[in-house]
Length: 226
Image (cartoon, rainbow, N blue to C red; front, side):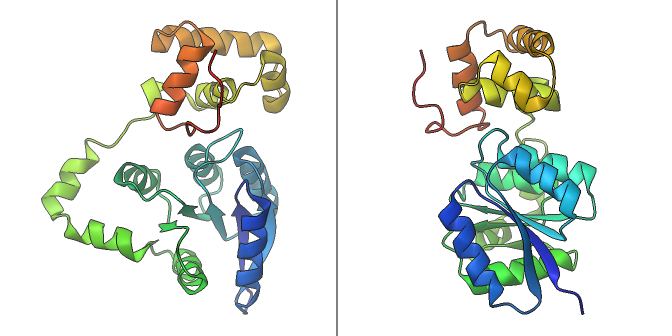
């Protein structure tokens, strides 16, 4: 029986190394790659075609939620399991909405992580026990009602605009953004203008604050707002 191939996506090397070491003890799971940014995770998934991606939310260049959405759109056979320090309901709802196979908090044991990977591979969903309890406590009608209240993608932005907004909020200049996305500086400038018009925000600081408030980046990612 072939092992379940896994891609680890986390911006901390020590976390990736720890996860790789833990999963190496599982005979039916094989880590085939490690990604340090959300964009790298998307690219590596396209190349390696892992069965499961274990994804952190707080990822540079492209946050884990948007990276997961792009992975699931481009590679529907790949399953995504979110592994994050954040267990807030708002994040859990977004993960459910985008179609991820599970959500684990980083306090999770190696045994539970391995089980989540196996369940995801089998086409099932799996959540950390604490999250599962909260989900079970919701009545069915509350769950249905919540579907209409789930956070929509920020301001009706396109996927490309979301990418550029995150890079702006991370302090990247137009030239850096153009290089990162493989597009021209003029195209970046046009997207930037569209962002400002759509959001009615007309400076970089305002865009950064919006990205933080919308959960596109964490407040700690951008340390200085001028």
